[in-house]
Image (cartoon, rainbow, N blue to C red; front, top):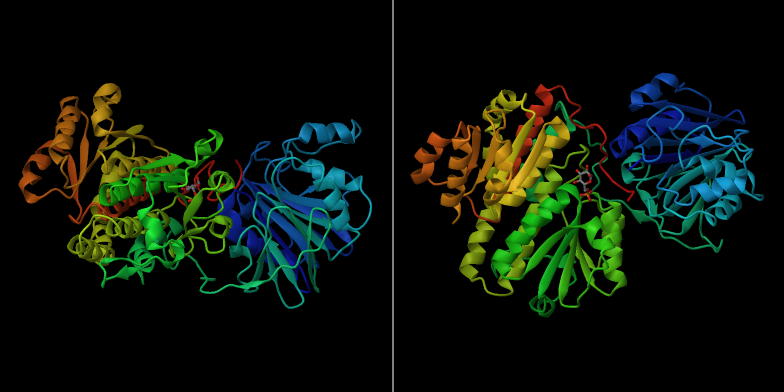
Length: 608
Ligand code: G6P
């Protein structure tokens, strides 16, 4: 949430900041701004709205070699020019960009007194004013200010009187340093750095770094120096772009046969009909000791976790629950030694998921991560895990990330199942199912024209329902989530069995009901739910892998039927998911929505 980029070196800074902000824009796009030091003067330029508003205001060729930039997702104060970062002190000596929340802002403002005039409604601005109260070099001033702050921050500061120095600090919001040749960068994620260097350092919470073109110094909050080793980034797709597609979301949907193959690659152990997951850091003995599993995540990661819970419980016969990470962390959870905790996160930076992970570890629990972003905070803090290897995901709504989470759960379910009751034959058939999954996804992608027609037909609906049972319910939740977040059509998911307990009252001829209808034991019961909807005049769209014997009945009941390959309970959630991704995408496009950056949302939610 909010993106920070900073550069000091010999190159013109403005193009580097703007390019960095472009790559970070998915973290927030309410407003953007930059502060650069040009001819010994601090210049701050900012603009509400998307980055192009800022680009129209700045001089790309300004003579400046040191600066900071920010793209904002509003927390305190609306998305206006004034509330955009960077913020300055009254004399415009300092400029700061901040990601996080300052909880004691009122007390800090009181300490500055009534004479201090604020230009914004943000909590962040107070930092710029507090810097003027301190003495010493920039790092000492920042340390002194941070010692007064209660809250979270990823912070970058420049000072007109130290024209080539940048100070950055981290507590709760990511900050990464990039080490170049005669230049230093910092950013809230790698995407803004990887075009310049492959040498990076992750700051940890409670650390501050002073950057100059010649190098860097990392300190703890007590000003003691800490030696940090740079890591070399490998296999990072530095030039991730639209690749000829109209939107990142579309690219991320159609790339899935490849990204799913990457998640599976090297992880199928055909000899023992199981999965090979070296990063778990768990021995076979540990696996059989697992009595329960708790899965934690937010948004689509939570829904993938719910689907994963279903897979593991069914295959390995271990009780599994999936919970919103933010609720779990605040309910003083009971942590048990024989429970395995799994945190799921595409970005590896979602604040609530990270906080839940820390809460479990603080109490002595063992935590695995299912994470996409290599080297992210969650990836670094878990005891072991599964990298998704889905490549960068830029569009705010998760698609390939979500699917790769499901695949990672399938692999884990296979491993846990084979460490317990399931036979080698069943293991082999699951391996085959997984091997064929990329092909099956390709077949679902070929249904795009039919799905696009459906999207157009129902785009005027003010509400839609998504229903499913047991394994199908988490799929329905994610289907509704996709549709609402990018098309803004109100969508609700229910277990099909719950319809008659309330939601049926809202079903009319104008509320399309998307029914998840896999070929499972509950198929006849879910078909009965369709009857109930039809009897109330609700148009049913069945997404199904039902066998031919049921086709006639389903065709009669439904206004439209989308048929996906009949695979198995581990992989079918991916196929149904792809149908709903395409449905949401085409609904959003035909309604003229901002597909990649939907209103009010951000991709990486690094605040509570
Ligand atoms: C935000 C995004 C969602 C995402 C969720 C969790 O809300 O808009 O698309 O599912 O965060 O993100 P994570 O990176 O932890 O998977």
